[in-house]
Image 1 (cartoon, rainbow, N blue to C red):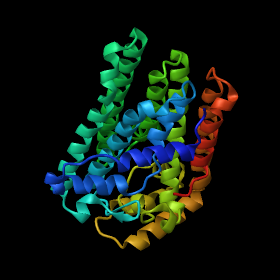
Image 2 (image 1 turned 45 degrees about the horizontal axis):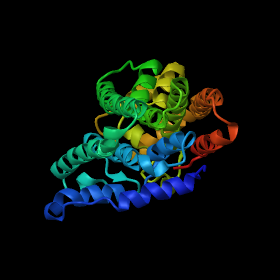
Image 3 (image 1 turned 180 degrees about the vertical axis):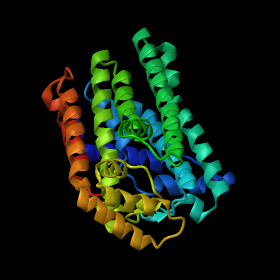
Length: 335
């Protein structure tokens, strides 16, 4: 049986709702529940289950593993918001705003531990499992470890970029590969590994997730400038006011004429400024350079590469239809 995206999303949400918390330590777990209840597309756990479902029907079996990836992802958001001094997440106050920074850090640490607890919840079945299942389980754990470390490496690159004046497009793409794309690609790979899929299929699914993940992040960059704040879930122009080294900023500095580059550098160097004025001025430079179209073209290139990898996965086309649909939804998203 092939499950729909909606069915898998419902399974993930129901399982998240059923997570048990220690009520005796309410102030630790309330921010966690607040974070996990605060929407989100559940992209990573759904991708894991979709990859698994291409080979097996019993998707409930890997629900703990799927939840582990979602809890880990939300842990990174909690800490990212503290480091970025973000105010809103998915249209609501960040945990460090609603509570305080110490709470956000400690609750985030607990979520990291919860993710590993969930990832190992299925360990009991390997005691009497076939050797192939044991191998699959430990391969999946190794992939999860790679994901958790890689995201931290990506965050460090992102922090390093704050004090760098000459971040290249290649450096930026590697940073977002680690920080954003990696969890998508590893989710797909883990799903395939737990289903004991062919190793080449697992690698192709990983490549598909990587390219789609890169396109996803570039689209996020684009929406931060040209999106509708009511739909996007956070204020537009946050990357501009924080001088975040995005694909759009990097390419604009590369492509702009002397006058536009000078104006952009002046806005970047200003210690104090009117936010609305800076956003308006930078967007005007983006429009002059045509960066919206450049970014959109890059997104479409990455999307095509991801689709090409998926086309080579050795299963019936009908079993890949859901991933094609999922990728198309991401490409057309507005939030």
